[in-house]
Length: 209
Image 1 (spheres, one colour):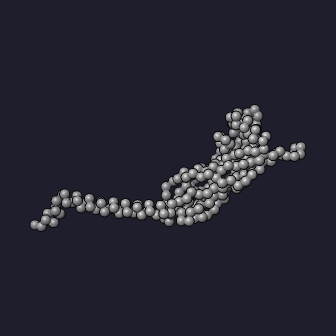
Image 2 (image 1 turned 180 degrees about the vertical axis):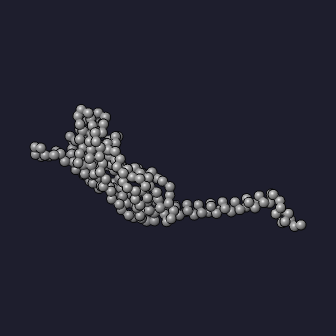
Image 3 (image 1 turned 120 degrees about the vertical axis):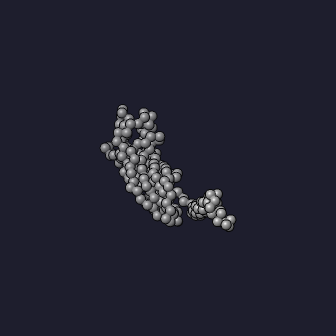
């Protein structure tokens, strides 16, 4: 009887064959992961760009002495995907307003969407805050800012995104965006004329993914 036939009947030889097959499978998986990693590094996604183009303020009033803030504003935000080979899935997007360290409007949802390579999308959500309690020092700060004629509100965006490269789609990534909104607060010139709040300039937003 040959050695090969003896090995075929031996338990140790069978285990070595199984190990050899598993080693080839593992090597194949590692090779594919390595190829994907090289492609990923070569086409590494760049985080999207965000710009606050407009902020139309219809109400920004603090009631006294309760220190309750009521806010109504519409913001126009543009976002651009700067990647030439990578698309972006926006699975969830929440937009809300902050004054100093306090959120002053509940989150407004933006419907999920896909942004292709080098595409630009524009959102114009409304932000509402009704009788939001303020700390006394924040109410005083708003009164001082309104007296000075300038008000700084931050529009913030939080969400979940995924990258798409060919048929490959990444896992979820957290999106954090902060856009400064510089507002001028001007009283009407005539008796009974309304106070006007104007947006000063287009703002570049900070983006963290």
